[in-house]
Length: 109
Length: 117
Image 1: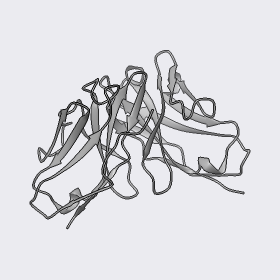
Image 2: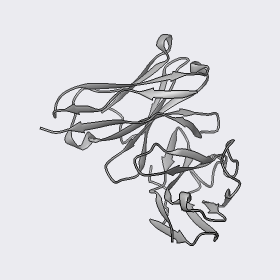
Image 3: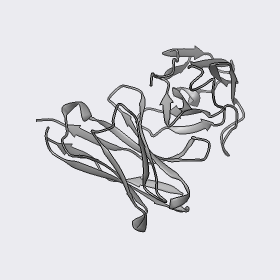
């Protein structure tokens, strides 16, 4: 199972919006609405930010939103804040497996 | 609700190892446990997952045959074990609770495994 394709880096200034893409195939992202997004700060465990494509767990700010079109899922962070600087990973269910994206380093300029 | 993992390990190539992940604060048998590898400076890799209610296990092809995932529901603990470690097993290993929609909503703090002669 190949990793999902994410851009290695993204950036934006405080207050701006940034969107991170996650491209898979019809066997994973395109085939199921089980796409999740995780935030990982340096030397910390990942944290679930989005599940089922667009749902936010309790406690995650509504500045974080998710969507999907075809085989590509997206995470949008609106109103960027300094604490949003982190690595972001997407994942998708694929029959009897789960696959992660390679990760995107988000820099807040 | 938390998952607490065992501590840092330093091992030699060829040695065996078992690391653990203890769940508390929730019904342990109601959620699968997934193991995730993160090699130094690299991304997350899905290793496999286990259903604590019946020990049904599913492995990534990349890890099948090299690791064993198990669970002891009597002590609400999942384990990840190797019989023969390699230097390339050096990584941080996370356990995570998997919900019905495949999301990993609770993560352990990670166990760092270093394999070096």
